[in-house]
Image (cartoon, rainbow, N blue to C red; front, side):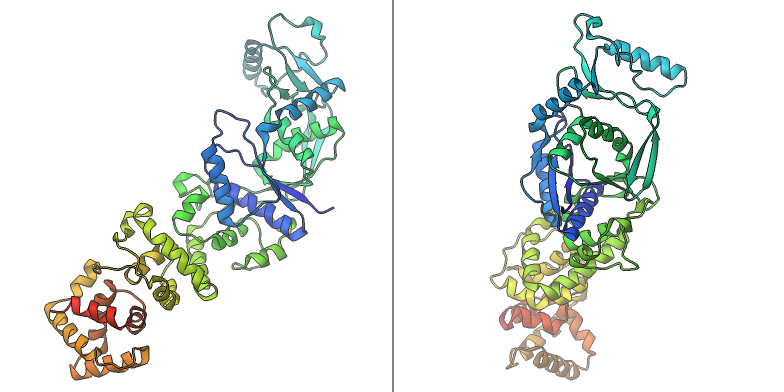
Length: 478
């Protein structure tokens, strides 16, 4: 049978970058093995779970290109089934009702703490009759955990992990109000969804030992476990906000491309030899669980940025039309994304897409992210008066402006508006003016793009066309 895996986030906030990598590993494993990748939203915490968080999870997964199979399972809708399983364990003698009051539990913990003992339930109702129950106390249902021996987790990443049975207490399955606990709900849902492999963070390793007891109490086959290492910041500490963005949606706003994120996240804790850059198709072909390491991976923003730059250039080569559409869509968002990159509130030029397609290869080489790329595209995609940046303005001294007027007159006589013909004409003009080509080209660039950095001036003029190029040159001339 082909493997079935799941990604099961709790909708209490953004889609964490570590959770996104967990989803990616599950997705790659499913694709590699011809299996299924299912999505379950663990929304049983009614106070913390929100619809905006659910929407953020869906949006983050879709942006990363991690499409799931079948319908989304909402854990909150399955409470009756969870209770049914708890009652079955109770009837089979593998669970029992516990009538401890909150005050008793607090006293138990205080005594254990004072004695230097681990704080866990002591099993005082494990073998008592419900007839001894105090009046007015609603019971919880607890699992009868093994008290001797050890639990062995045969983990596909961490190896055999042994936990002494006496480290596991009789955990609660159903609360006093009848609501299922996380431990019970996860196991029941995984069983009913026919999950064969549970791939998740190593911080869930201890949960595996406890959850295995439910499988065994019900006589169910235990899935394969693969607990993957956590992601740390560059300093080796657990990844946190002080290291930078944590939510997937933030990386989209910052201008990272999904294919770059997939490539980068795949390399955090997994490797295929020394390969650093690989396509999603290659990742699917190569991905196996035995190539996941046990050590925590370190998030390196410089590497991610470098990788993103590579994929910008790749997109400009392989899908220029798609990249142009993305850039045009992003230009109006720049003001909200980063005020420093705020684009003027100008309308898009009717020929914006055609212009950008001609220039996209060169623009992409100069950008590290989609925001930089969109910002560099603004002068060629928008209509209206050109907004000059201070450095460009500084180049346009009176002598340079006068020269631009003469240059516009000379270029108006060029018959063929092509890179070659414009190159010849500008060189001839520079020679006639006894100037170096750079002394002409730099003021030209400032007048044509409003910037001191742009694609080649001849390529820019061809993209803008004869009329707009001459209009821009004359607008800065005196």
